[in-house]
Length: 381
Ligand SMILES: *[C@@H]1O[C@H](CO)[C@@H](O)[C@H](O)[C@H]1NC(C)=O
Ligand SMILES: *[C@@H]1O[C@H](CO)[C@@H](O)[C@H](O)[C@H]1NC(C)=O
Ligand SMILES: *[C@@H]1O[C@H](CO)[C@@H](O)[C@H](O)[C@H]1NC(C)=O
Ligand SMILES: *[C@@H]1O[C@H](CO)[C@@H](O)[C@H](O)[C@H]1NC(C)=O
Ligand SMILES: *[C@@H]1O[C@H](CO)[C@@H](O)[C@H](O)[C@H]1NC(C)=O
Ligand SMILES: *[C@@H]1O[C@H](CO)[C@@H](O)[C@H](O)[C@H]1NC(C)=O
Ligand SMILES: *[C@@H]1O[C@H](CO)[C@@H](O)[C@H](O)[C@H]1NC(C)=O
Image (cartoon, rainbow, N blue to C red; front, side, top):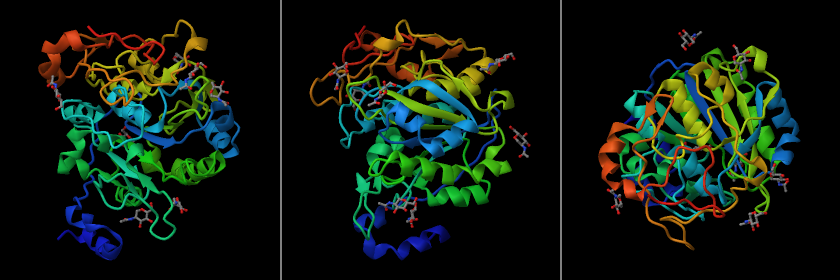
């Protein structure tokens, strides 16, 4: 038995029979240099309108240490599809928070990172053990919501959940502290606070102060900060009938000193997270909405990517899902990635081309900046 499993034994009476399925925990590292940063960290908070987040004192403090993104959009409602989009380059019509699983032939950012040997992982607060695939894990004392699968993007992909080596990279947030101490943090990581800490069952005040308390000591940690880009953002806006704009804050040692305390008002959305990582490390692409998304401006400066503006910012709502395989109101066929798309020299991952190039009549990705919504659903072929 691995030594690190021993502490879990004390939890045996608290856990369902699931402990038998407990996965190993892994913390592989790598040091692949990027053009603008060599580590990417994102922390996702919940359900807050732009103005409210921007007015929170803790988040304002964080903005003052980095770059505030004032035109960053979520891509639909409710939560789950936004998380899926940020790692998958589409949300496949998801209009719910159900236990959806993306089939094994749907690639995600993990495939692009693995292709270049870039280590990745996820830290999920209050996940009962590494690689847990259950829908939720509550606080065992108060029974309040704590960990939820719908906020854990990679575990919703069968290509991750079906592979024990990959599942072992999705760990409790307590492992963040251990990996920090041991200098075994991955180069790409997704951090999800629990349902209290992320504001879902509390308020933006709680989410803001949790995030400041988590990050403030790290901002002085040379190992953590060195060449690191941190994105703090929200899954979605609170008000369904308005534009789905959320706050984004870029922080970390990779942010150029002359940009600290500034605001970047270029148009971004959750697909920009993938596009920025692809541009930075010269990754292949997923052939989905990642291809057309804007790269964060200071990174685009280093990668020679062009920042574009939407034709009409005021008409962008992104407040309701279009039809798709997981839409429980309006079904649509599974789209094929567009294997011909290219952006600033970045091409679709060869393995994706091999799988999908004969299905191009079923694609709806055009490489444009503007993404579909229920009001403008995607057109196939
Ligand atoms: C992708 O996987 C799904 C689910 O297994 C299957 O229905 C679909 O035919 C597959 N598509 C391709 C092109 O392999
Ligand atoms: C998971 O993390 C929480 C805090 O995030 C901690 O209280 C709990 O003990 C951890 N559980 C395990 C099994 O490590
Ligand atoms: C979530 O984590 C925080 C610590 O970060 C803790 O105070 C809180 O009790 C946790 N929420 C639940 C429901 O367990
Ligand atoms: C910072 O990261 C760079 C690679 O991006 C590395 O060459 C350098 O040694 C690191 N410095 C410290 C102090 O860790
Ligand atoms: C999205 O916003 C439009 C414009 O305000 C509104 O007509 C529509 O009802 C909204 N959709 C939802 C699901 O609230
Ligand atoms: C949601 O974001 C939009 C765009 O910034 C903003 O106009 C709207 O006020 C937000 N919703 C609310 C209720 O503040
Ligand atoms: C891009 O680079 C130019 C020239 O080095 C610099 O003046 C500008 O501030 C940079 N912009 C951003 C957003 O990084």
